[in-house]
Structure formats: structure tokens, C-alpha cells
Amino acid sequence: MQVFVGCDHAAVAEKNTLKEFLIEKGFNVTDCGIQEGEKADYPLMAQKVCDEVLKNEENFGFLICGTGIGISIKANRNKGIRAALAYDEFSAAMAKEHNNANIICFGARTMGTQNILKYTQAYLDATYAGLTEEGKRHDNRVKMLDMD
Ligand code: RB5
Image (cartoon, rainbow, N blue to C red; front, side, top):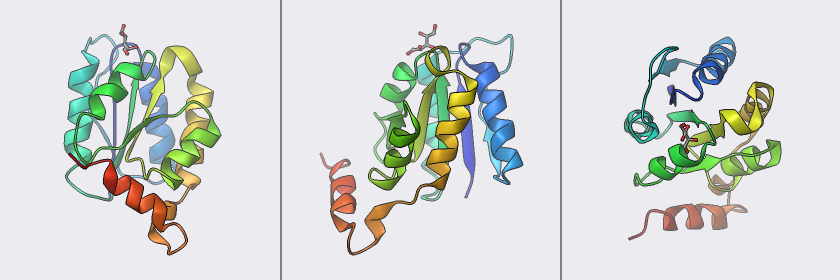
């Protein structure tokens, strides 16, 4: 299982802090870019992370742009990607528990670094409910997300 992080120029500092946070927790983290001083279009950065996450079902990732909106829109155009723009700890946990989100998106200009770390922790602490008999309805719905 690998974790991928990516951002555009609006969120380099937040992405770097999040990356360190994940490394300290023992995750194998790959930084898909960008670095301070560089500029990048959020659709291209989203695609880089999506391509990596899609290589293994256990992989997941984090994408940050100014609002988290553009980068989540692009990520969700990939079949198999379930990108959630988390806006508090509850939504971050639910994104995992009910939606089995494999990418969590944040807005650097809308939530701040401490909130990003808090929401990340909530996501990491959550478990996907769809694998139990009781939570089967969630898995049925998640499978519908990729239906044509
Ligand atoms: C870049 O200025 C900004 O548009 C981008 O980071 C993001 O907020 C788009 O959704």
C-alpha cells in the first residue's frame, strides 16, 4: 500500500506538511509534486496522483489546491477514483466509512494546515463499512459509482 500526495501552486506548504505528517505515521509516501517556486495546473496534478492510486486497490492519496474543488472535479473523472472534498472531521471519516474514498481533497486557502491534519487523521482512523454484512448497502452504492 502506498500513499500519494499532490498539489498545485496554491498548496505547496500544506502538501509538504501533510506529507511529513503521513511519513511520521509510518506511511510510504510518494510526493507527486509540486515544490516551492513551481507552478502547476491542478488538473495535471490530480491526474498524476490518480494514475498512481489506480495501480493498486490499497493505495490512496491526498490532493490539495486553493479550494480543493478543481482538483476533486478532475480526480473524479477517473473511473475507480472516489475523491472526496473533506470539510470537517465528520465528512473526512464518512468519506472512508461510507464512500471508501481513495483520494481526499483539501483546500489550502479555505481550511488551513491544522484542519487539514485533523481531517486527515479522521480519515485514517475510519474504516470502510462496506465489507461487513451489516454495511453491504454501502458497498452496493460504491459499486454503482462506476456504472456507466
Ligand atoms: C489556483 O489559483 C486555483 O484556481 C486552484 O488552486 C484551485 O482553487 C482550483 O479549484
